[in-house]
Structure formats: C-alpha cells, structure tokens
Amino acid sequence: MSDQHSDSRAFVHATPEDAPGGIYHFFTGVVAPRPIAWVSTVGADGVLNIAPHSYFQILAHNPPTLGVVSVGEKDTIRNIRHTGEYVINVASAELVEAMNLTAANFPPQEDEFAWAGLTPEPSTTVATPAVAEAAVSFEMRLTEIKPIGDCFLIIGEVRHVRYAADLVVDGRISPDRLRPLGRMAGSTYARTSDRLDLKRPSYRSLLEDGVVAKRSSDT
Ligand SMILES: Cc1cc2nc3c(=O)[nH]c(=O)nc-3n(C[C@H](O)[C@H](O)[C@H](O)COP(=O)(O)O)c2cc1C
Image 1 (cartoon, rainbow, N blue to C red):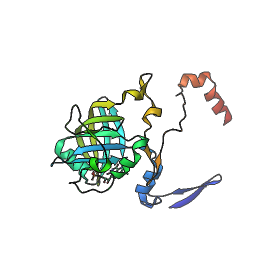
Image 2: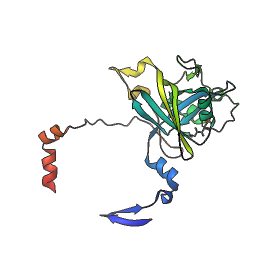
Image 3: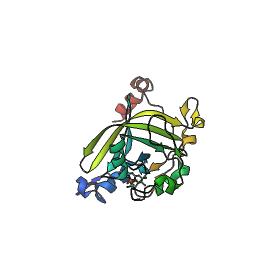
Image 4: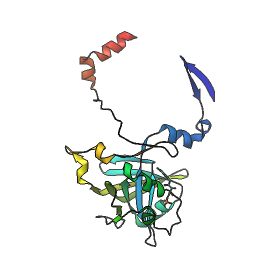
C-alpha cells in the first residue's frame, strides 16, 4: 500500500487483498447500491426455498438474460442445478423485512416461504412458484453455471414476466410504484426515492452547445 496526494485529497494505492476490510467489503462498499434478485427455487424433496442475491445484473436483453452469483454452494444453486429453473422476484421497499428474513441460514428442509409469510404464486412456464407479494417476477430457465473461483455465476434466460399492472405509467415501469431496494454494504439498504434525470448528450449536441470548444479552451 502506498499513500499519494492529489491536490488536497490523499489517495491510497493497494493490491485487492490490502483494500480496507479485504476485497469483499471493499467491493460491497463501492459497488453500491446493488439490485436484489430474490430467488425462489424448489428442492429435490419439493421444499420451497427463497433467498436474496445482490450479486445480480442484466447480462443481455436479446436473449433476455440475467446473472446471479452464488457465493459458494447454497440451497439456491443446488436446487437450480437439480431443476434447471428458478424465479427471480423483485423485493420492493415494503418487502424488505421478509426479504431479510429469507437470508437466514435455514436448513434445506425448512419452507422459507412459510417462514417469511410469503404466498407461493404458481408460475406459467416453470414449476417453481413466484412470490405473490412481489410486484415483478421473472420465470427463469438455467442457461449455464460458470464457476469463478469459489463463486458461481448462474446465467439464465427469462421465459416469462409477471408484473403488477399498476407499475406501468406511460408504457414504462414507474420507479415510484416499483420502489426497488438497493443493497449497500453490510446491513444497509438504499431506497430509490431520491433520483435525478439527466439527458444523455450526443457529440453533435456538445459541439452545438459549445461544450467541447469551451473545455479545450479552459486548458
Ligand atoms: C440483501 C442480501 C443480498 C445477498 N446477496 C447474496 C449473493 O449475491 N450471493 C450469495 O451467495 N448470497 C447472498 N446473500 C446471502 C444469502 O441470501 C444467504 O446465504 C442465504 O441463506 C442463502 O440461502 P439458501 O441457502 O437458501 O440459498 C445475500 C443476503 C442478503 C441479505
């Protein structure tokens, strides 16, 4: 690790292992807020399982593909390997406590829907139920599981979406109605009520507005 100064702000250079708290805590502090995939699965014995995953992203939209990472072997990934399917539900702000409860390390024979007071909603294209209380659910077919060190990237294709009709305003999902949660570090969550809108510029508009010329004349 070495200290360097840029104007009045001190900067530290470090290897990933030396980052404050180790790279896991550094990642989760910096790569934030992260969306949360609330993944429902069914075990080999038919027991319902659900767990939040904030290592979660859109990987492609054609075909519609989402990625979730299992940090090690857990019931969720074991069930997905067995059935080849799962449902990704969205935990809106009002479901934060139920979502958090499902992160407890329940033994595989426990029905986590029952523990969290969630209602299983039959899905259309998979045998795994969605969470009836969730405003959006994606029915997923497993594409592949890619091991990355001691983690596993679970890549799946969306086969069907279920969403509350009242989420849609002017043909798009309204963030005020969906109220998605973000995960920060540790037990901290972000609400998505404080937002800003900013139009993406084109090079042409920057030239027309004189922004490029202004920047270069500043230097
Ligand atoms: C908000 C939140 C996000 C989480 N994200 C992940 C994740 O991305 N990957 C993971 O393996 N565990 C994650 N966890 C921990 C799992 O939810 C936890 O280990 C759970 O018990 C796994 O359940 P399972 O054994 O039924 O699969 C997260 C926990 C919380 C509260």
